[in-house]
Length: 319
Image 1: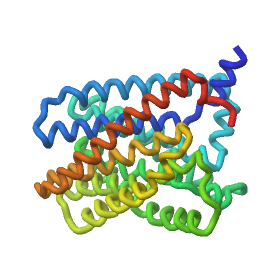
Image 2: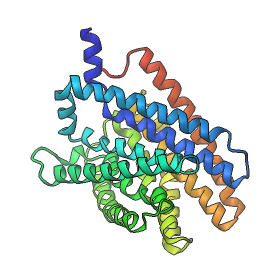
Image 3: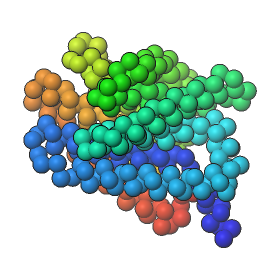
């Protein structure tokens, strides 16, 4: 009994990043089915599985809140873990995108809850950054992008649901603070000690803001313009940059932070498919299929590694 309580107390809020990865994969599969005129058979299945995964993790974390409240409070005040709380609201926003073409009412409900909750998380996290008395530069890592990426994500479902001005509001928050955080992160990695091994996979998060920004901006703007191209090619460059670090990533021990690989890869895959859709340039189609194939391999590996770690009781343990 004590061991079960201990594992519950150590159940991390970052577990919701697996929902982000699976939802991103579901949306990427759905986009591929659309632009390549395939029958939508896989995406609805993955969307439902992702929704079930979200509910399971939500129930477990809710139990943690009820039975191990102090552990949750400690996460809320932790200089690194605090940035993972918005993965809850981002998961809701991604699920709203998953359901957009299958159940509009459900998609709208998920979007309204997700966007409202994300605004609360953004304000909470930014207040913690501003009024802290315990953060230092070594706490800075790419996971700090998570609250910002969620804001940029809002328009993807918000515009089709009819919330244009609200979508611009959230997009503006994300697009203003993204380069600010990017500058601080580069200062941290260049002039200060290397990130701990457990946080190295979060470098993939660098891909997400420009990739998601591209998707949202095209949704808001309605067309492909020069600024959209800047966002897309920035995401493509960051993808190439992290791929040059493959040897470093391949030597890492499995941590739950490996799920940081998944959503950014899904985002740049979706961005590239949208570029192909808008330009009809076959080069983008080839790149998109390559990225989607890599994403599929990563998702398969992540699911296997996570299940293995759960069975082996290698996660949800005291750090």
